[in-house]
Length: 270
Image (cartoon, rainbow, N blue to C red; front, side, top):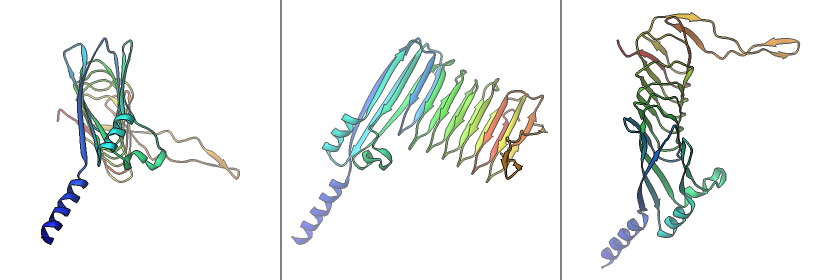
């Protein structure tokens, strides 16, 4: 009997320890969109271009907590706000800000995963923070892509803009080379960027713990020094430790900046 009671008590403890989960799926459709902004916090963003004229978004929302009461708090405090102003659409996840102690994490967990189909020529701003990957495929418009704890992958894209993460790899394959200044940044991750042959650009590259590689023919470029500081009657310059190269006949400025990782500038046609 004693063993049975112990076993039952252990099973009850395990059941209590298992978090409750509440999932919901939502579909949103927008027409006349020229700009799309997605502000996420926890979760993935997956955007694919298609031949249609509307933005079609499928959003999966997940709440987890140890009790129904805590789930109820999550439902009250966390929301997805959507607004359209003319040709601009923004989808933003909102949750209470309890400063750096992340109070809400002690009560519940939440995430939103976005799968979105868009017309090819949209301007895109995609942002997410935790437990997150950003995937983008087939778009031709400009972009601003930002992650914190996760990687970024862009396939067969065109346009120009900025791509940055903190903890993750950046992998980009261009269907057409950028025509304007474009930057790629990570702190802890390799920058693996593939361009079409015949690339003409001025590239600035920097890494602290990694290598700088390209299979395009390059010539060295001087990298502008920073403005001097005057100290005790002397001028002191700080080096930004960038390596500058001209690819082809030169062109738009491409910046590759990582701390712990390599910079790979590839010719996808080789």
